[in-house]
Length: 348
Image (tube, rainbow, N blue to C red; front, side, top):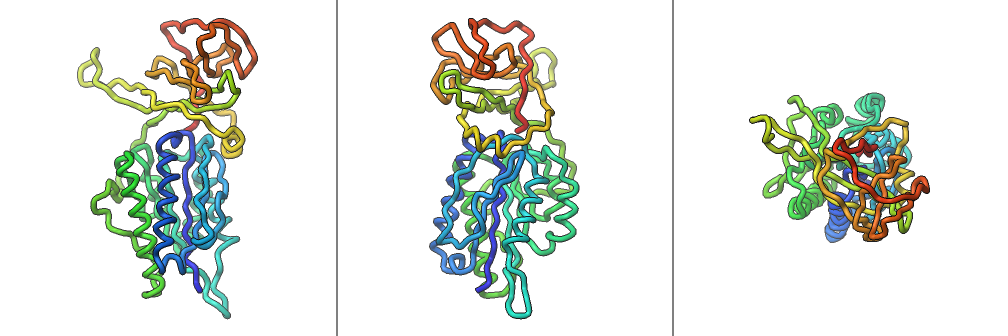
């Protein structure tokens, strides 16, 4: 029996922390549960999941639906799309069955890429490799989660660049149903019509649109993510702020940019290190640009964004005397001056 390989290449960078990654986690489980009820998909579809942040990692090798269980998605630092694409191509080289004189190989693979940010690595070599050797033999569907993606750039490697325009729970639910329906339709197509081009379901009733990648796309950073460490448990966490624009009260018809607190989230330290890249490059953000003080997601301390003299972020509770879990410095909590403090910002 010829296989229909389905690859999910999922962005697990810092800006996905919180609700987005939880929605993807739930959505993957929904996709698999629904596909298992479809006889065509159950017969032909094989599924693999690759996560990428600063680095890429195989979470689930290509396997039959009845053996597949959705993995738990980690969080990492950076959005290395070039590295992820190279990882995908290497994985396909090792797992896909090619046509020989004795047997027909796999149907044309379908690759779904979910991302909410722009590449933080050099993508040129990977793009050239993809376009020269893989593009004609794969169905690549790239989905931009929100507006913070350079869709024109993604149009260089795919004719199917889509945008999920809303990221609420209802929109995510509709989107993952669309993914499921598209896989089901493609499974029927390869079985009945021997046609291995992906058959995408209609967008009716969901907040999904196809992007015209020929148009210029100017992208700004929509998130500011900081890494903190719990003073009580010594465990790391991420603090996520989302960009907001408001009319200036000083200069009419001009906008003021700031970042508003979304939440703070504990992370798996080993998984974060494994999927993050540290090239010595740091972006900075001033505390005056951020609104909102989180509580610590690890121990519940009231202040989750306190800055040590070493420049790192940690949490503080009711005890005025504190000890930085990063450098070990001890002291009393004091207020920041009017100019604020510049902090290292995660790559997102």
